[in-house]
Image 1: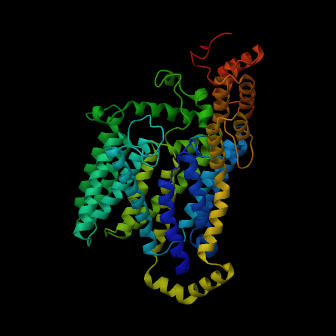
Image 2 (image 1 turned 90 degrees about the vertical axis):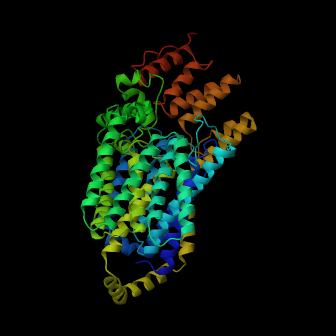
Image 3 (image 1 turned 90 degrees about the horizontal axis):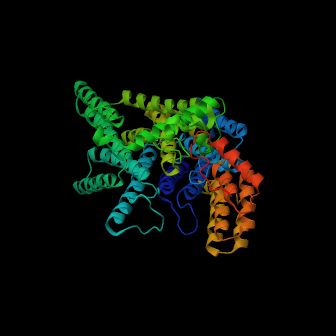
Amino acid sequence: MLNTASEKTLANLLTVGSAFVTIFVAWGSVTDPVNVTKLLALGAVAGAGFAIAISFGAGRIWGAHKVVLIILTIFIVTVINSVIQSDAPFPQLIYGAYGRNSGLVTYLLLTLIFVSTLVLSNNLSFLKISYGLLAAGLINCVYSLWVVTFGDFIGWTNPYGNILGTFGNPNFVGAFLGIFASVLFAYLLQPKISILVRVLSAIVLLVTFYEIKSSHAIQGIVVTAGGMAIVGFYFLRARFKTPLVPAAYSFLVSVMGLISVMGALQIGPLTKLIYKNSVSLRGEYWHAGWNMAAKFPFSGVGMDTYGDWYRRLRNDHALINPGPNTVSNASHNVILDQLAYGGWPMLIAYLAILVLVVIAIIKVTLRSKEFNLTFVGLAVAWICYQVQSTISINQIGLAIWGWLLGGTLIAYERFTRLSADEETRDGKSSGGKTRAKTKQSVGISPFMVGVIGAVVGLLVAVPPYSSDSKWKAALGSGNVSEIEKSLVPSYLNPQNSYRYASASQLLEANKLYDLSYKYAKIGVEFNPDFFDAWKMLYYVQKATPEEKSLAKKNLLRLDSRNPNIFDVPQQ
């Protein structure tokens, strides 16, 4: 068990750190203001949290959560297997594709976050996690209100015309605001809060509803409705002794949910209100992910390599809607992403983690009928995340909550299972001595352990950020030599397929034909399965007839069913 100082340090770190990962964006210094920055923040938080948890609570984690640790280890092994078996570029498998960053490093850090929460054993620590989510949600609420009222002060490109929050995408911010609204609703329903706080919270909730509507994200509405419905169940179950009221409520909500799902599938009276063409598009992306697992059942296509395979393994009707030239680099379903990336082993391991969390939620629900904000907030937020994850992408600012809350719920279940007498008895017989020995063996404060862990985490997560900042600086300089320097691979400067293709295109547009040709060739060598790399080799002026012929063969290999594949200018 953690001593008081180490648990307080860890709880504060996870509370502030998780909120920071969600809200941290950087613009001006990088071309991707969202993903590489959040990965960098995740590295620091995960490294620090894991260092504290292992240094002061390794025995507790292993003693209380052997099954959890074994399943998490198996999951990471399946991720490593996916990396080993894939032919994709190593930097892409490790750090993820440009604009996604869902590689091995991200999943490793998320797993470390999960493990870090398992040592929490104080009710205030659990409550702080919910407060961290509320803080991140409030910041996004205020920022979105500013954007709606005065305009956006972040200088990023916004092709959507909607609020983006600190996620750079209206769907992501809509979903997160839905999670925030659900937890805030639970906070409003708890007794013994002042009238002023209740009124202010209600105002924030109404503003959040408006912003979710402004995001035009159906998933935001779905998450909000589902989350508040779950909060309503726990509230009614606590208020009424008879089980008939919550049972009737659950039946009604289930019927309404079924009708809504049918509407999303173009069935029933709510079709016009709920259905969007994006639902059909997601269906095509899901089919492609399934096809990837069918082709590579035991290894998947590789971490964050969905985009390299989409053209080859999409269904024929995807050429009609969304069309032959519309592609995706994610299945828009986190569960199917696991299946596509690592095959059935990775999916089964991931589902096993989810099952452990569901079991913890059910146990606590059956154990107590009390409307407890700590538990309800954690459970509702986790369930809301899982709902949005079935129709969305594993964006780091959202994903951290799925893993953080999952581990926290498992730790909370154990905390509530142990009686106060048992905790006291454990403390008198062995807990105090164990804590003293643990503190002595570490020899430094929890804060310093966290700092060391954060530094290690930053070293693991910094390469994509460092590389992107160098590329951004080179583009801003307008100096060809600087651009070339930024394309030289190293540990702190890993390259990606998108950058090589972009560099070739930029150099060709500026009539630097020799350099454009050079990086077009490097691009196809770096990733022979990247469609745009072969496309650039075909288009560059210096390419030989033999190279153009080879490029066309590979374009056909990567997109054989596209009727427009040869609609390219002839020499």
